[in-house]
Length: 145
Image (cartoon, rainbow, N blue to C red; front, side, top):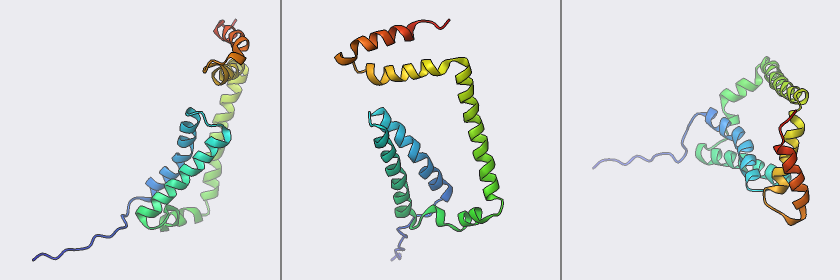
């Protein structure tokens, strides 16, 4: 008769997967909640809930959080970690800043803001905004000089 071996309930995977899942859950949940019509606070709370949900799933499947693994504590404790983090953050902010400046100087910001207002208030037709939406629609459909 063959012996049955018990398999552990805790499954070990790569901590990088859970780090990625925890980080990407926040903006993904915010985008989905915004698509379904939640307000700013609602989308933010859905993002927090999704990140916490990823951490709970990590704890259930792994038995501990990814950030408490030995390799992550070694990464966070390196002396050059803060410098690398500052360089990457600075590069991302520079890219974002450049995109905003290009939009400001090309005149695309006003049209984008008007389109945002139009999408928010005029896509679901509402009788209280009918006149406003018709004027805004004409302004958006005109070609820029």
